[in-house]
Length: 435
Image 1 (spheres, rainbow, N blue to C red):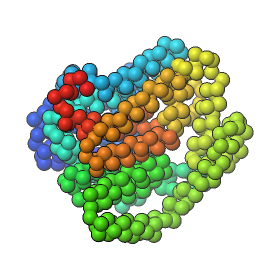
Image 2 (image 1 turned 120 degrees about the horizontal axis):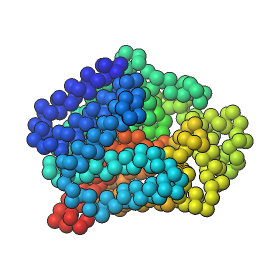
Image 3 (image 1 turned 180 degrees about the vertical axis):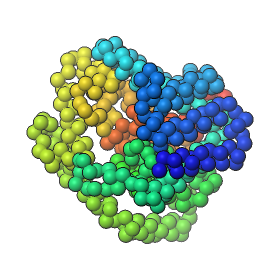
């Protein structure tokens, strides 16, 4: 499956270069887009690319380092001074404080590199938006993500699925993820494709059916967290496209079509959805009780609820409650969770609290809220509605997984942040140097 997916991605890459010649005319665009594609190919070939090959670094980590280095060379350094970038610096500062307090210096380096990747990726996209426009910048990534849908289709036709829940759930569900190592990373890419296709749909550059295809792809990827997170963005995109600004008769037609579509999806996927989400109601109904007791008191069934999410969150919060006064504010240290547990927290906010303390969690919330404030400033109501829905989806996603701890999630947030930044600021481009 890895060879098939690699070939499809390479074809999508060369199609983008041929279809959009302006990519090759910009060193920044060509370099950034090429490294983006290389990272995906490495992830597909995870059996090779995840192994350490030099100084403990794998091909995937070396690709991230190359991205940071090359983009920094080609990008305009003035963007480093933008006020909207400052929240990222606050997070890096909290990481440094936590590393100095805990002595987790290697973990600090690893985490800082991820945030540096987020910074240079965001700056690269901002610069490309201003040089080429929103649509022209998003198009090559759209073709690439469409290629990933083809990879998924190939995995379905070849029967190359993965049993996602055999170890920790009563629901044995198959994920079709095009050769990826984990359904989470692949689903984040599809969510990114949903974002980009929704924006292009509003710009009348692609057909309205495309975002729905990415949502169907998320259904077959079968990662519950991302599927739930994508519902609001999907509804937000179609609400903005079909409903906002439409005449009354059209609104009635849209509403009726939405009900029919929901019914059709229920008929096609209803059985799988009920089986996959059946335990969700029971878990939420007992949430307060399960989070108030010590994790050592969980029985076997309670530990398996929501793919063991509640059990993991309780573990981290219980151990955090035993930290010293400084530890509560500065955390156990970057990546220090590996010294306490075998499994990561599966919650962005709990993980930040545990590793970086209250200061790190506050810095993370400042970053998210600053992006929200940018979205509020977007003048186009349709684009504003879509941008808010995807940020809300990202917030929901972060409650049950940790997208910012993966390169795919770093890229996703870069697109959410930079489109919000560009759409909010494009009317005041003369003031950008102080924004």
